[in-house]
Length: 84
Image (cartoon, rainbow, N blue to C red; front, side, top):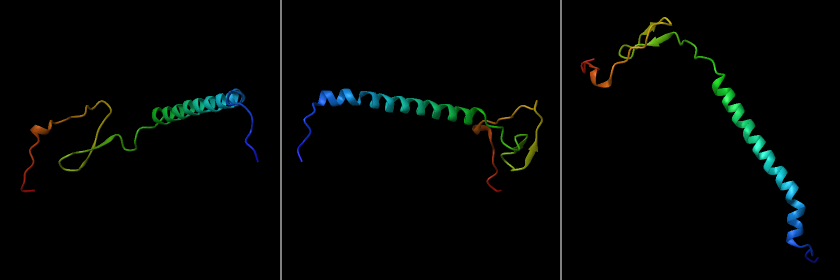
């Protein structure tokens, strides 16, 4: 069997629409993937039990109201009794 006698320029010209379609489908697929990721991230609900917080030192649950600010203590001010 002999090799084809077509020129590479002619083959490149014939394949241009197919390669363009593949590139377009990759772009559209990437956009849809970004849309789905954004929809999943932005459309998520608050976690269950968001109105309950855990006290860091004791591990007890603390009920909080919506207008109650979160109290934070810098790491340098925490005092842990090594005897516990």
